[in-house]
Image (cartoon, rainbow, N blue to C red; front, side):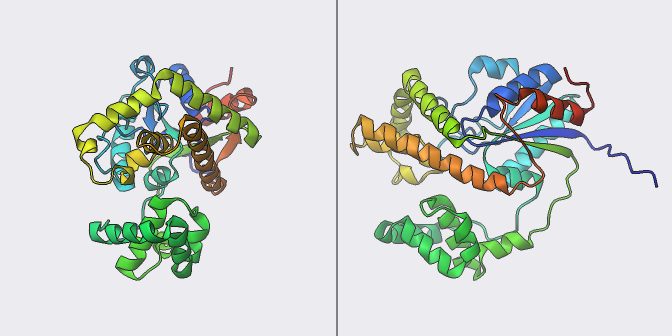
Length: 322
């Protein structure tokens, strides 16, 4: 029996931990293959978060069209469900222009929302979130993680004990519905993709190499004026008058939270740097946990395995490799 030819439009998904080289490789691919980039990053969506978020420079954005960056102010909410809708619109527009869509980022929830769909679980509830935040103030987020483990052991195994945002959401869903978030996620119907997707994980095999890149990149951010950027954010009226700016997803982002705390007088410059680098390494660790679950993805180090990486892309899009 002759196999059915897959005629779905092709898109490339570049996944990986922070500081792994995704953005640089996405730019290179877009240059070579006439592509446009769709950012899959929950920090790049915010205006004003540039240096600390490693947002592509203005000349890079001018060289290659980028989508889903600077779509919200840092005090505005933006959900994974909204991202999925916006990203699908961006992808369809890129395909309509005859270009290659290149997804690039490290936010696993955004990738899942776009490529697999999300469970129809309860919407966010401000009162419930406030109650959980108050409990966390008293017992700490590790204590809230222990509370989550008692009602949803599967979710607690996936969520780090200091990941406040995900702990809060998991507890919120359980308290609103009486049902574990892991059950909602398990029952979610997988979205039948209208695109053929090549999933590539870009990451060095040696974790120490990534840790060194994280440290080097953070020091470069400081030289570029990261603290001036955070000063400017603190001066925005909507943030300066916000009751709890550190509870906003934008300001909770690694680096920004630690800089904000230091500018509030918590610790010295050395401690700030250590905290920010440690938080970034923890983020990378969580990203690796998610990436290991992407069974259909192929792993490459974009530095030492560039030729086989390029060959995988060429084979997917039907072009001879260089």
